[in-house]
Length: 367
Image (spheres, rainbow, N blue to C red):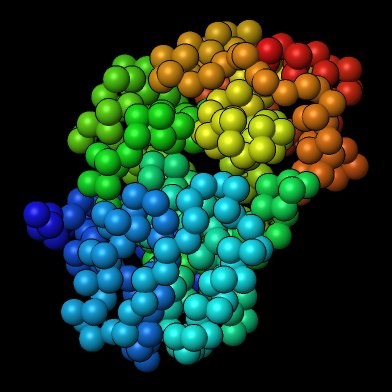
C-alpha cells in the first residue's frame, strides 16, 4: 500500500547562482511528489526517467502522482548500471523527448540512483539548452550526494563523467522509504559516501557510523534519517558556497580522485562507487599522514570504520599503471593531480600532487 504523505518533512535549502531550491527529506513523499517538485506554472509535459528496480517500484507512483495533477507524462526506462551511462543512452532520451514534444517549460524527473540522475540531468541540461529537472533519488548514494549540486554527465571509455554540465535541479525529493528495497551491498556502498562527510565536515557522522554500524547498513529509521540529513546539510552548505568547484567544493572529492580511477580501471563493474571511494579514503588517510597533515590514528580509524561497514579497505584489483592512466585525466588536475587530505575529522583541504613515488607506494598499499 502507498505510504501516507509525510508530515513536516525536513527541508534543506541550496542557494546558488545557477538556481536555488530545497532538498525535501522525509518518508512517504513519492505519492505527493508534485507538492515538493517546485514545477513552473506553465509545465504541461513531464518525462519520468528510471531504470531497474526503481522503474518497477517507484517510477509508476511518481507517474500516477503527476498524472493526477493533470500533467501529460511519459515513463522512459533506460538500461541499468554504470556501463549504460553513456552518450548512446542519452541520444535515445533525446529521441524520446522529441517524440513526446517536450518543451522548454516542461520537466524531466529522474527516479533512481546516481546513474539515472546523472544521465537524466545531462539530457535535461542539453535539451532546448536546458529544461527543468527534478531529482527523486531512491538509493542512499544518490540521496546523500549525486542528486544534489547540479553535476550531470556521462562516462567515456577513457574516464568517468568527462562529458557533462552543471544544471541545478528544480528540487530534490528524498523519500527514505525507498532505502528498504536496496540490496545490502548498495546500502553499504552508500555509507561510503556518508562517511566522507564525517571526514571533511561533520565528525558526528563518523560517531554515528561507529556506534550503530549494523543499523546504518540496515537503513534503520532514526539512524539513517539523521545520517542522511546531516550528510545533505554538509553537501548543501558546500554547494551553496562554491557551485562550480572553484574552491571549497573540491573537498567533496575526498577519496574520489583515486576512487574514480579504481572504478574506471574495473570497467565500472568490479566496484560499486561507494566501494571505490572507500579504497580512495584509505589512500587519502595514508596520504594525509605521509605529507604531515594528520596523525597515524586517522588511518587506523578510517580502516576500522569502513571495515565495520563491510566496505573494502584493501585487496585492490588494479595495477598502479592502470590507475595512473586515469588519474592523469582527472578533471581536477592542474599542473599534476591534486588530492584532498584530512588533518582531522571535520577538517580537509586540497593539496598539489606529491611525488609520484609516494603515490605509487600508497597505491600499492591498497593491495
